[in-house]
Image 1 (tube, rainbow, N blue to C red):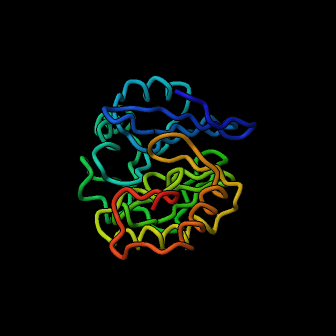
Image 2: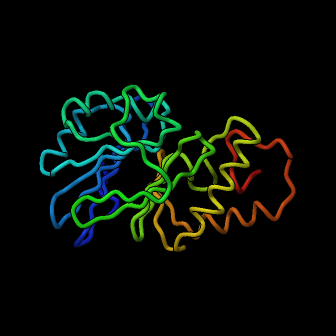
Length: 213
């Protein structure tokens, strides 16, 4: 567990959980102790232990891949709070979500307000969650590249999600992805611009790194 953000208002904790070391985030409003969980990769007891000092309000899902959902059913049973996801990914979650999220929806807990950003490409229903200064990017954006895509059409779609949604956010936004360490949006935007200025194979997809593609 690592506390990656803490100030007078918000705390963001990152856990690497499950068989793939996938990131799960507990985000707490320090004014009210209300909290949310983003993604449920595994090891539910570790998440539940941390939540004992807070008032859990939601479980938010960035997408439906199994490395993000292993603890979802147990967390739902223990917490009895709404699971929220995009409708396009809902059918492949291990349990049905209680709330269907769409682009520009708002999630509020305590004094914190997250904006929902629909960023398809990695999956049809991939979501990111933004509050001032911080972005939970799921598997849409990582340091030096986008999330893995299964076809050239998916790659083009995730690039459009990045250009039209994420790269429009303030450049000093800290980005917390579904795997690995966090980054800063300006760095990723500049890396993408360098990538976009070079010629590429028309069928580019899969695991793409801006610096090497």
